[in-house]
Image (tube, rainbow, N blue to C red; front, top):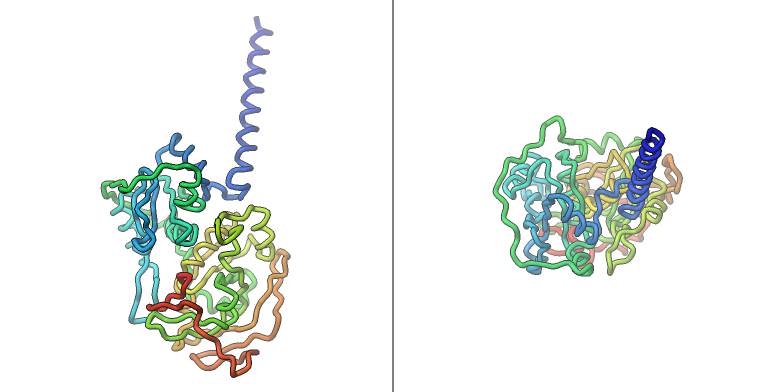
Length: 370
């Protein structure tokens, strides 16, 4: 009898060990093996999660990109509500701040402990607006959130049903304890400028190569040209490079992304920026997905650094990642620096002045949306 009990207990222990091993093996492949794979859900994973736990699904698309199709149970909370224009400083797309962000979240019925799934669409850059809300939640110290890969398009491709009316939730008090709000997630000029040249802080410009090199100009809120070039020492990895291709906008695998970001030191700080922080938020999300911890988004981005009336130095030559960690910087040429809105010393002939980025629109936003 005693021997039988021992055998039975051993069998149970073996089953538990196998179960634990399977759970670990499954976790290792979850989210294409990303270290923080919990931040990215496929449509199939979302369908499964809906059967297992309460979720708050959030459609972040603005009216311009909303096609009337929603994932069942989703609320609408356009990402643009978390940004504002500031004509006084001639800057657009500025973060509304932690206090207002919490008010908006509560107004839409979101609670501190909710598991929030954010999505947009391929037409709106396949995650590069949902990523802005991810950054907001990360700054507020919200722990349970994810982005739906390929957004509503991925959901439809997986056979997901859609509805045409959003879920309506009762307003709540969303309150993040001050001790949990991580203001370091938000970088400003006054933080970045004195740290130029500090090897701990790696600066990542995620705009197009033409914008980075100053061959295509970003514009201010009133449409005037901003300075050409990039923050001194910044590296350039276009945010679009995170996708396997521009059509499907599926995320590259962990191995592919690790190779692409191999020159960045994951144990050091990384500051991402673009024109208005939207694209920068996408690369911020990808780095968090890859397990980078000290990641910051430069909120003002080129709207702030590129102002003609401010002294912030710029470069128009490329800084190349060495592909080694810890970070080693290689420069292709001596930096071309300007200040106070004056003309840049550049390797370009004077007759080849930089042109505004193609498709520039009113209010200072270039065609790809800031």
